[in-house]
Image (cartoon, rainbow, N blue to C red; front, side):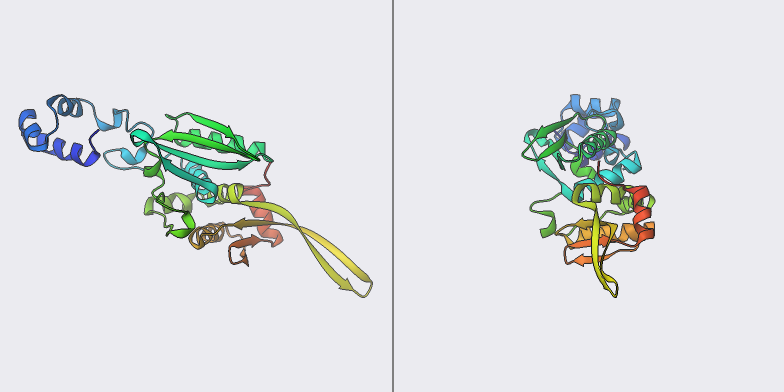
Length: 253
């Protein structure tokens, strides 16, 4: 299989007036392949279906809100591994305690990469939601060797545009994968005696400082106050901020 750079170079030679035979001699690509490239635009090629980044002019993935959520799921508790023949497997791990989360993750993955089937694999206490495609690294350029917290995680400009437009869906993906909404109990000693108060709050925990920072930036875009609870965990506890996240994230189900 030829890479996109060679294909583009070959097509530019044809556009410059060279014959198919001369383009073949200069590039080493077979005559039949060059004719197919000339007659079948890349947007109709099987390798480009479902991947906006593979278009002649790269586009942002669609739907944008679904991509923002899947990006959060991937950064929170997902990974990509290379399989034979250049295919990559995207996996998001979902706790079996939340069957609704599993179904939502699968539906979101299918929306973003409709040309690839989504499967599930039961593990001890969790379910792997998986999809095979050659294009997952194109949609998630943060993929690389080693654990995510051991390497820089920086969004591309086109990813930042999507997250800026859909910060709530991005935060939803992060918290549904590596966070939770729980009750915080506070003990107060009053003249009348000891009183306990309960209030809900959201947590997001991750070992990557870069991913934590991305979560904080998205919360800032939403206008939800947050703070670091620990070095690897941030929380949203103010009543108005929790109510705002309830609209965008909601409890796991």
